[in-house]
Image (cartoon, rainbow over all chains, first blue to last red; front, top):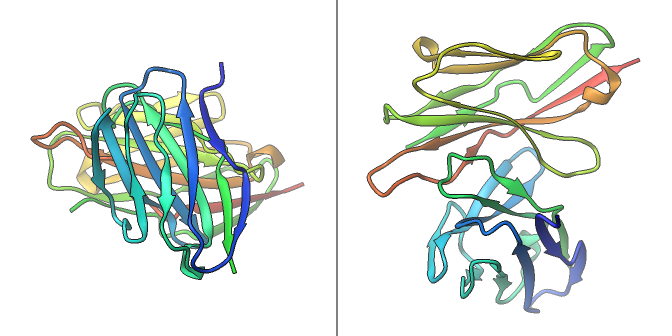
Length: 113
Length: 117
């Protein structure tokens, strides 16, 4: 089973560039979310989705867009990359409600120069 | 608003020592869920345990045990006879249950555990 798949694993962007971090899950999970992990800050929620067609903002949504056109996919878009967005990004999914076990992808290490 | 505090930023122990990782949470809800995740040096996040607010029984799984005390809003994690493979960052997390269902996981800042051989 693939679980939660994130691509790419590593990415270097120049300031101002845009890109999409891909996240796909094959477990038919309703809930998906994006977190960023920065040193000493733990994991902070960017955006989340409770089902196809429904998204909501988390703690640190500025500079990021998401969409959920299918149950399986939850891409994260950086519209105009900034050095402050240098981070490790994790996608997670869970079956029905947020209080069930969340499965995480392997992470994407993004550097913005 | 929900909040999770892991006051210990880094802990270093010698192999075979016992170690307790502290987690204190804040919530206004009576129904909520608490979690622990492990992040080994390889970077992935590994689920360890989930506990709901109505179940205060302590849990033991091998060398791992968890102590949930609502009176002190704490959900502490103890590793007995630590091993080098326990070296990782450990995250405590909280999810509330509000009128819309559930809120996403809110994580503490993590505790980095180093176990020295």
